[in-house]
Length: 60
Image (cartoon, rainbow, N blue to C red; front, side, top):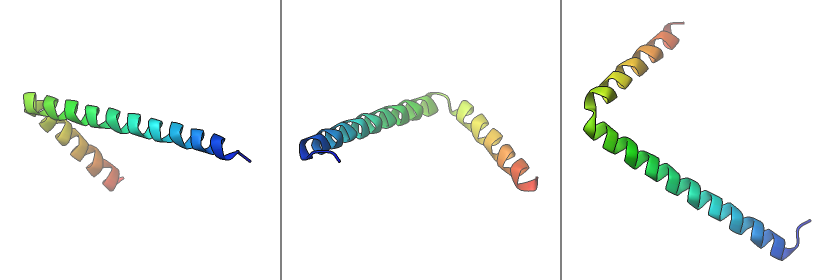
């Protein structure tokens, strides 16, 4: 069993990891949004490929 101070350290590390992970996710989302604004044709092609993939899976 962890002592109270050890539990606090574990929680602090968990929160730090979560915060860093959320920051990274937001940065990736922002980058993807900027890319989509600059390259709408690339986004449209990805969407078409995804739709084809979903349709193929649904009919399998």
